[in-house]
Length: 283
Image (tube, rainbow, N blue to C red):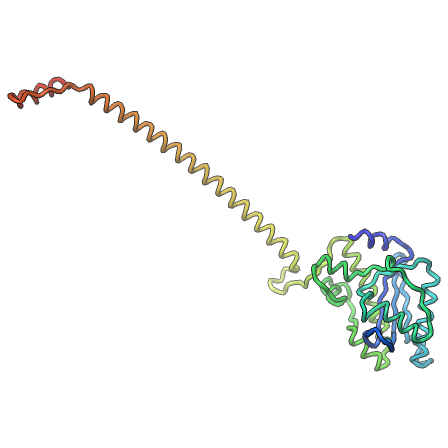
């Protein structure tokens, strides 16, 4: 696990954070309206929601939003050197910039959080998986939440429909989901690919790749053994051939010596007698 992340999760002033709004931040006013900011601390399993639904409909939506942001400000001020683990909330159109910009528009000055006190879990998971994943993907791949939650676009739609309690429940679930992601990282069991449907062996693409590499390694080892075996067989065959050639040379040499030792003479005047004499001489 990343060393900074290890240190953060051991710190009592470190919290998981997630939020919802009615849109993305363009960098200009007006900033998107904040419907919910959810905080979770795993040390004490405490979860705090700063949400419009706590104040609405007793108060107008705009006033309820200001009240949740004031509560969030107080929470930061009460926790010295507060630290946050988040999912992509350092993006230009989403996250801390959007929350701080909206608070400023409403006349609320939120305390600045140093960059070293923020850890983007999405970037770390992207580093491990070599690709960007959404919070929905990482929770789905690992089956970390057993209750339904909303997409960001649905949370924005629900704002216009004044379904603030549903938004709050969704954000609250996802922030706990981030904690579960870190728990999977600690155990080394986090999946960053969906499980294959066929065959139904429950393996992810990464696990399949690991098994394929093991099979390739075993195949290469088998091929090396076959090559070595063939080399030994060829060497043995060559040795036998060399011995055969050597023996043949010896036999041929003996034959030549025998031939050279044979007595041969021929008298043109008595050819038949000469042949008979050669036969008797070499018996």
